[in-house]
Amino acid sequence: MSFGASDAVSFVLHTAINGLAERQNVIANDIANVDTPGYRASSVDFETALKSAIAGGSANGDIQATVTPDQTPVGANGNNVDLRKEELASIQTQYQYQVVGEAISNRADLMRAVTAM
Image (cartoon, rainbow, N blue to C red; front, side):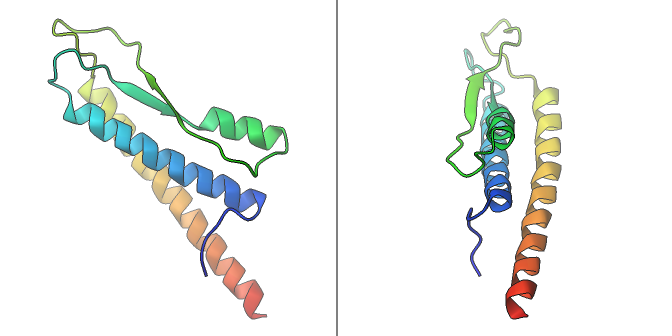
């Protein structure tokens, strides 16, 4: 059974897991560039668009994560990566990914059980 965004719940879970994966990629890139002169850290937001879609009853379209440069102060070398902040964000994102992954797994189990009846 493949997991797709065929209904509102599936759409929300699919969007969340993709947004969290994008956030983790951006965090990894920020950490990799912690010592790169002039590098600007970025952040990812998909929750705002997802909440709007849900509130508007249109949780069935294509929602893209938004990547924006962080406005944190820049150091002497022009770099604004805060390693502690990035590490904490990475841990939080990992936990969120695990929770959403578990929800996807539980939903797939439920769908299999229902179709087996």
